[in-house]
Amino acid sequence: WKPGVENGKAIRTIIHLPIEFYPQHPFKNPKPLKIYAIKDLKYPPQYPGGEEKIALFIKNNINYKALANKNIKGTIVVKAVIEMDGSLSNIITTDNLGFGTKKEAIRVVRKLKRWNPGMENGIPTRTEVFIPVVFN
Image 1: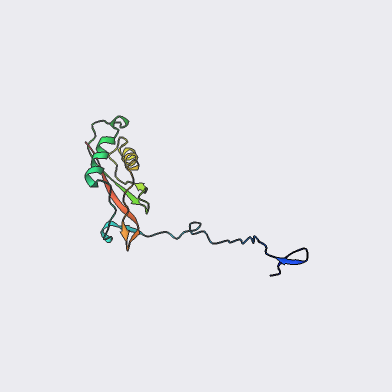
Image 2: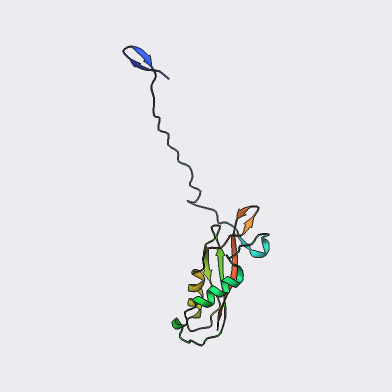
């Protein structure tokens, strides 16, 4: 480097050197992350309060008024993925008792709060879960 010069003498100067980086963004084209089955994990995802809290939440949040048949009875199993941050995604069901129960089961499961995600080697995982939604 050549020093700064003032009145013919070399002086200390500060220089701001812009450096631009163009790293590959890790989420721009991510590889699909493996989705684990609960049985494959030593530490599976946990809903705060456990299965009893899930069942109670579902029971208290089903909107029977939205159903065409208010006296429907049965169970629909909802499949979802617990993401690494504990949120739910890929919420689907192939079960259907009719009268709007499929739509209502998915709506109620979407309202569940965040889970504690499953862990594999100390790293949060994406885990597939099955949640029964009981209509009675």
